[in-house]
Structures are given as C-alpha cells and as structure tokens.
Amino acid sequence: MKSLVTGGAGFIGSHIVDKLINLGHDVVVIDNETSQVHDNFYYNDKATYHKLDIVDYENTRKLYDGVDYVFHCAAESRIQPTILNPLGAIKTNTLGTGTVLQCAREAGVNKVMYSSTSSGYGLKNEPPLREDMPDDCLNPYSVSKVSGEKLCTMYTRLFGLKTVIFRYFNVYGEREPLRGPYAPVVGLFLRQFKANEALTIVPDGTQRRDFTHVDDVVEANILAMSKEDHNHYGEVFNVGTGTNHSVLELAEMISNNTKMIAPRMGEAYITLADNTKLKTVFDWQPSKTLEDYVKENL
Image (cartoon, rainbow, N blue to C red; front, side, top):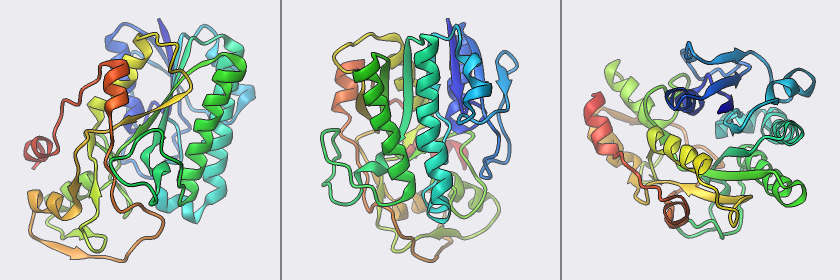
C-alpha cells in the first residue's frame, strides 16, 4: 500500500506517518514546514518528504500518482491566530483542501481521510455534540475547516471520491505544539509546570473540553482506511472520548500555581463528543485517559 500524509511533519500527521510505516506502507509526506507552533518537525527515516504547500497544484499533483490512501492533516490549525489572519486560514484550509481532493480524484486515490474540528459546532448546540447538529462557526478557523468538510462531501457525491471526515475534540499527546500563548492547554500546562511557571488559565477556567489522546485519533484514521463502508462516505464522524474536564480540573492534576490571563473571543465554552457513530461504524473505542497521561508526564 502507498499512502500520502499532508502535514505529516506535524503533531497528528507525524503519528499517522509512524503508524502507516509500521503497517508496511510506502509513505509520502507533503508539509511546507511553516508552522510557528512546533519546537521541532518530526520525520520518519522510512518516509519520503516534500517541502511543498498543499495549495500548490502544479508541484504536488504528481505526488498523488499511485497513492491508495490520503490522510489530510495539513492546516492552519489554531483558532486565535486565524482571527488575526483570516485569509491565511481560508487559503490553507479551504483552497488547500480543495486542491488535495482534486489531486486525489485525478490520481484515482481510493480514499481520503480529512482531519477537521469540533469547533464547527460552536455555541448554539447543546452537548453532547452529534454529527447531525447544525454548524455554528465562530471564527475563521472553524469556517475554513468546515468548508473543507463540505468539499469532501461534494467530491464524494459528485465525483465518487471516497472521503471520511473527522471532527477532532481537543487532541493532546506526545509532540503536541508547545510554542506560544495559544498552544493546546494540556501540553502548555505541562511545559509551564516543568519550567516552574504559573499555569495560565483563560477566565474563568470552568470551560470544559473533551480531551482526546492522539493515539486514539490515529486509530480512528486507520480503522476508516481499512474498513469499506459505502453507506457513510462523505459523512462526519466525531473523534472524542465522550467525557470532558474543566480547565481548572486539568490544572489541579498538575499544579496549584495558576494565574488568570486575558479572555479570548470566538471559542466554545463546552466540548463533549457523542462518539456513538464512530463506535458503531468503525468499531472504535478510546483507549487513553487524560488522568493517566498527566501522571505519566509530570
């Protein structure tokens, strides 16, 4: 088998690359390595890397030839930076996804797995969040990522390209981004603790998140790759544990040295996945807990 991973030198993508290599796949990676949130990019010696932008049809199109599966992880992937640069988010997340899908279609790729976001549910939906709920996009990140979802659905319905759309809930784990004030909170808190710094909490800390380990995200992708289910292509699947913790509860697991920082706009108050669909269709189960991860990494 041959697979292509966009964003394969980043957090989630690099874990998918490693898993595919372990499964014996020939793996090609497209990553422009422009992300400002990583201390390092991550490489597997057995994969082939191309430092290109997913929007660059002319130079990336040939890389899809002979590929069986595409895992599309590349994105402008943080809410607050996209508020500062909406056009960058639209270019990468919407036009970039359209380019990936068109290249995959022209190359005869068997299936595309698309990494999207639970932020598409916004504020107006009552948790637990289900895939049949309406979109409520609050920021350029969620708008541009959900636009990519719509493109996946259209490419399935109009062109017959098999796509699987994942909405991830607050992914954490080894290699998660640690740079800057908008880094994901689990890694940020652990970094601050180890540096003897106060844990910085966005007011008022009672906001709750469905923290989902990257290994469980990878497993969802591999199950979707492996299983043929023609009744659900072009559809959204939540990838979350079905449990959540407040930011204050997370902080209490790590340190009592905390401080409040400035509020942020454009973010949901509670995320909690209804993962029934993913469990039913792909026989997926979450295997990691936040409490165990924090204990292992203190």
